[in-house]
Image (tube, rainbow, N blue to C red; front, side):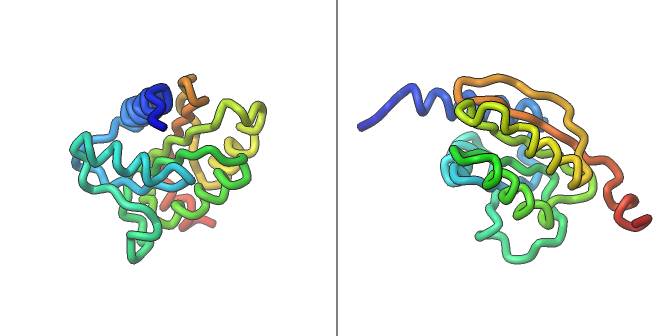
Length: 147
């Protein structure tokens, strides 16, 4: 059965992710999470054609500027999705992660995982489906060369 409130919630999340990451048609975007296909279709409907998932992208070589993670799963799976897209992200990438409202206080693990990956959390916006958190990493390539 069609549930319009779920569609409206997804559209709100997509709008928020686009705004927080400043996504444009020029950016390569990698998607992950259990709702990555819904996110993929929503972005394609809006004209974003440089969108992929880890399963559709052949080689992970840091060519994507934007990473989006969405789904209705526990934070551990969200952390795994972040780890999965990490090799696809460039040194100055931006990510947006949907943290489901039913998860409660599980955003701490996701925040720590983002920091371990070299990201600095920039913003968080509350939506119908939860919290969309955005983070940027700057000069990650230089940090990797030093280590």
